Image 1: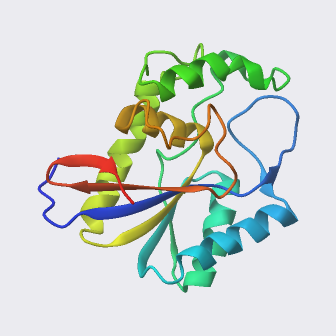
Image 2 (image 1 turned 60 degrees about the horizontal axis):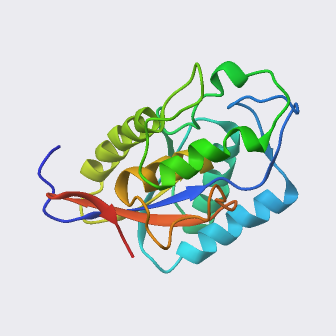
Length: 195
């Protein structure tokens, strides 16, 4: 990790509500619904007074669309970065979506046990490490500034497990509402939850 004297403040947000092309599990796909577009606008409006210096997002369409709408409110361009995408569906890819399959894994992540993962996919540790590597680069680029990072619910849950296991103000179980945002900061001492 490079030396960062001025903390970078990253507002990590989940994408807006999306409609998917199929009811089968996949990490890809999804386009914002009218509600999702309104949520993305509201995200930009919430951050309008915060002097946001950049907007970065996952390459998945639902995140790009959310970032573009929020960035338009903020008057900023969007940078798409690989590595911020949702955890892979692994062996569940192509099966009908079943929310309950992920509950024990996500509850373990929030408690700090990132060893669990989707069979044939990533563990929570692998997801968090992948995303934190990208966030390190963003923090280096935006030292002392605030950046909006649009990603995915599973990514946010893995970050909570990595940075603040068992925190009282963590997302409730596996609920990360669309366009909910959480602040993480990085300085020379590493990553921490922000305000």
